[in-house]
Length: 410
Image 1 (cartoon, one colour):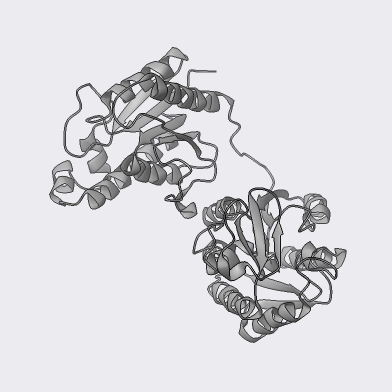
Image 2 (spheres, helix red, strand yellow):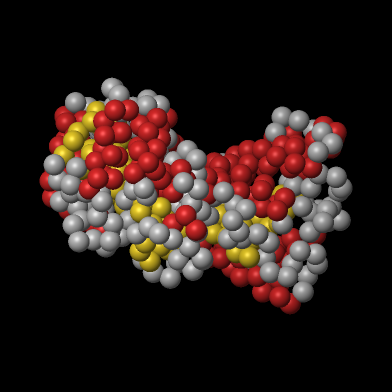
């Protein structure tokens, strides 16, 4: 294959040594490196391929006008707009094969915007001093973003940060050579779930959907999975959504860190993507298993799934509240929407004898859904558990009707 072209993004006025080292690492691997300067105040001490003035022009302004904003946050946001526009243009023209960016909080802020503008399958690596930090909201992280901690490199080169920089450069070059961008000939259905110890419907649904001519992508609803599905739905990459695990909605509603963002359960509806929705796991609240249990959850049913994630059962008033929140989100939908309410249970753990068996709480949730879910959203009440075959059959019946009516194309 031809040598991949990698775009390096950084502030060349303050990170010249680092950017030149990265350029050297990339070229040593037989790739070509281009440098985009996203500085605001000063010119770089070396020649860059894309200047800060070109970045400003791509944002519909000038570098001086950005400086005149007199606010570092506004200046970086405007610079990020230009960097994103230019990067996407370069990728669409086939002039770059991957992107790597580095920075502290300012550079990371910009890099997240750039990465989010690029299609799935374009290698994107961010080397950041705040990698994996709770400062990074899930809705700003691209579905296939690779992030590394830029350890010990905030100011100047040293042996520690050289190790991080060289690894990151190797990652983006290797990804550019190895990537198989999604080019399916079949329409893709997005399906949300937890693991099979909790939600099992994907076991019968996946082969049944594939037999109907679809490709099936199953998203793990532990924060970033639901975020990835929301992003792909918004970009028109999904023919339909079977959103059967809404625990990220209840998590966010109750302040859990295991969140996919405030707009979870809204992207498909906003984009007019047909969606079948069910409340899998929604009456639980996730939290870090390794942290101290918050005081308000200590007297409730509690289950540690592993050393990373645990969950507590919601009280009846909380279940009613999240039911109203779900109904409000679905009321905004611009496309066909059907909600299946399994009256026999919505999680393997809420079966009789399970740690979260709460028929009264489930009935309260269903009552609130019944009261607040309004047409044109279709409500289907099902006398079955979400993990029963009857649930999968009900979802397929809705989808088959939509296929027959031309709402969903195969």
